Length: 253
Ligand SMILES: C[S@@+](CC[C@H](N)C(=O)[O-])C[C@H]1O[C@@H](n2cnc3c(N)ncnc32)[C@H](O)[C@@H]1O
Image (cartoon, rainbow, N blue to C red; front, side, top):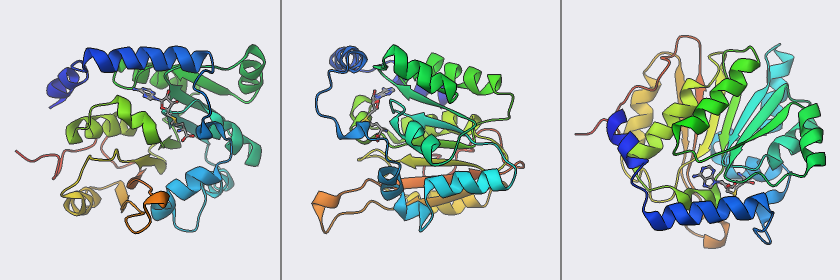
């Protein structure tokens, strides 16, 4: 399956690749225009992940980890790093890194971030080298993996092919970098992906030792203005497999 997926990541139409390049250049120069996603307020992430977080907030999850003597290294996939900055104001993080197409930070912002051990990786998540850079960053921190990996891509998902297997492949790339000390993944599921068999997948994956998964159905069918894509929370304990097993619906023939 991995081979097939490697191919998928290289069959992006030329048009899409061009538009990725354009977005990268625009983001580097802060030319994306009015962009609501530059807010540093983590409460917007809390809202997006409400179905899987319940009454807790992301900040509370991190505070709770600290209180238990655990580390708080966070990866934010498909993000310029705004929310990591906001989170670190609510409670100091041990460190954080975000993956985005274009890094538009000023020198001053880069210095401020470095002082907080915050970093940005410029790269396309469809390329292996982008994930390798994230792996190198967490290895340098001397821990077994990220304590929290988030992905609230919203429109960012438009840049990747809508494909269940590709989504699972990317989920697995995050999983392998997740700490086995109850590290947490919070991710949106691209609209159009994973339309069938989710209940069965959750049931099957939860039977595997060391893996906990909670699915949050999309919201807003009644009020389209409040549309929030489906989400997934996963927790990895030390006895969990290092890579995600392929279970239904992903293992379908
Ligand atoms: C709409 S913004 C969301 C930012 C942030 N997650 C938030 O919700 O505030 C989309 C982000 O996804 C990133 N992105 C889009 N396609 C990407 C790709 N193929 N690889 C990596 N990042 C990508 C963009 O660079 C941008 O940072």
